[in-house]
Image 1: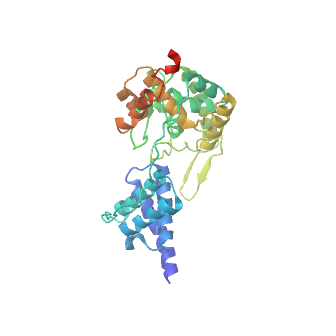
Image 2: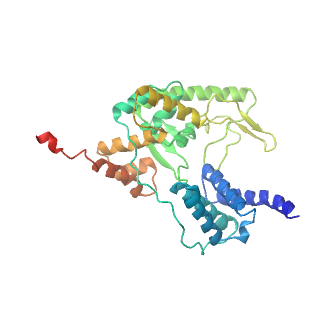
Image 3: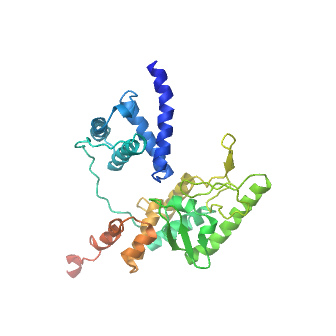
Length: 326
C-alpha cells in the first residue's frame, strides 16, 4: 500500500516542483538540476516525502556529499539551493534548523585567458556554421546558450547592437555587434531564413522562441526566429500540440572548439567559456572601465567582474626580475 501511495505521490511532487521553481524565473537548466537533486534527496531517505523532513536531513545529506562523495563546492551549493527552493516554492516552508553544514572548500582558481594571437588561431580553425556561433563569445562576450537563443529581431545591424533576452538571472542587456561578425552573421541568418521558409512550406509552424520560460506559437513572418537554429530535424509533440526546431547541440560547438584548440597547438586547456574570459580580459587591457565590462558581461554585481582586474594586476607581469639587471 505504501509503495502505491509513493508511486502516486512522486509524479505529483515533481510536477509541483517544476511549477513552483518556474515561478522564481529560474533557467531551464537550473530547473532540471534542481529536480535531479530533489530526487536524490528523496531516494537517499528511502522515498520519504520531503514534508516529513527538514533542516536536519538536509544537513546530513550535505555532510555526506562533502565527506564521502567528495563533491565540488559548486555541486554542494547547487544541491542546497534545490532543496531550499523545494521547501520555499512548493512546500511553503522556510528551513530554519539547518545548523552548521560541513561545506566543501571552494578552490581559488584564476581564469584561463588566451592571447589575441591564440584566439585568432582557434577561431580560424572553426568551420561552417560553428564559426558565427563561436565568434560572438569573443566578439560580444555572449555565453554559449545566449548565442544559441538569440532571436533574429534582437540583432540590429544599423545600430550595431545585440539585445540579450533573459540572460543569467532573467536579465536583459545590450552588447555590440563586432564589425568582423556582421557579414558572416548576415550570411548565417540568410541560411536560417531558408530553413524557416522550407519548414513553413512543409506545413510546420514557426520554431520555438528562445526567451526564458516562453514559447512562440504562430509567427509566419519569422520575426522571432532563433539565430542558432540548425539543420536538425524538426520535433513534434502531438499531445501538447507543439512543434519546432531546436538549435544545434551544444556538444557540437564544444567539440569543434576542442578540435580547433588542438589544431592551434595550445598547451593550455581552453573551452567556450575561456573565449568569453578572453573577451573580458582584453577589454580591460584596452582600458575600458569595469562598469562597462560588467554591463556587457551581464554580471549581477561588480565584484564578479573585478576578478579580471585582479588577474591583470597579479603575478609577475609588472615585476622586473632581478636576473634581468645582472
